[in-house]
Image 1 (cartoon, rainbow, N blue to C red):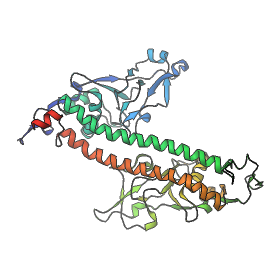
Image 2: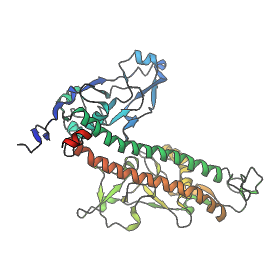
Image 3: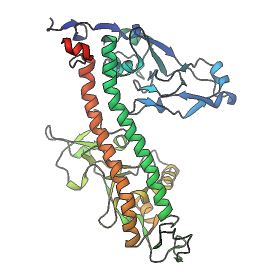
Image 4: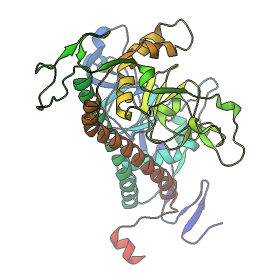
Length: 428
């Protein structure tokens, strides 16, 4: 069975002129390794050393690693160097995380390095081809305790292969979207750093501009004693839970979706990875205050403690999460104040002798903050509010770009949407 311009294959219809190949026929598959951990001279060198924790995320490119090795460690182990632009895929445990290297790196034995055979394909296209084929790949994994990818897996994986010019155009279209997503992420990291630096300068070190535009404290601004030490005259001390409302989430398994209309359940996983196919669903008819939306501040107080600005659209607030809000203070104020205490909250949770560390509401009450007068708050709002708004806008834009990318990927890779060079388009 075929359709005009397409031919039938074992993976379904693909365009005429495309080939069906075993994945192992178009890439070199490279095994990794780990230098002996007991040999100190093998570690903390200049060579980045990849493991899945470094690239198990939503981004295409991996640039940094938690660990590094020395030249001696490289030469005395089975690990190998992958070049910038080549690919890494996790093969055991967390299976199928994929990234493209932003620099030369070594890698461990739980991963495979992939290098495109340049006579047939290129690394950019292989990245997207593998993303497209990932569900098939997972179905062919082996092992009972852990899913595992072996070299034989790549022999079993059959993939469609367009002509080289079309490969390059497909990868170029998808790369533009991924590049903008990663740029937004880097922009937000910079904005976060700027916002926190300004906040600390003004509200921790009390160097906000005085009436003459000079740093308040170092220019002789009047200070008074308080429970936190000296603070500017006219400022007050309040506990964290008095500058904002910390609304705890619901046990949402009690609110199953009633039909095709549902809300995604936001748990700690979603704070880190966003909404995904495996995200749980709940009824849209939960109390309104437990519905979260773009720009809300979410604080996970149990397990992995995080404070994030939400940007994944409407969702439902699960238990173990706070939605933080205030009718009195601006978003940036209670966001940065909560972030300030995150290290101490994490330490408190780590010190608890339980399977899942957490904090209690009393820890919010015990966390005191200095509250400025309305004049300083108003001046700061003109500086810090636009930073928070830009972070939110970048997150929303990235979410839309991801949706577009994820929609285009299977259509481009299967040939349902074709791309042509200008000469080909004229002929068509």
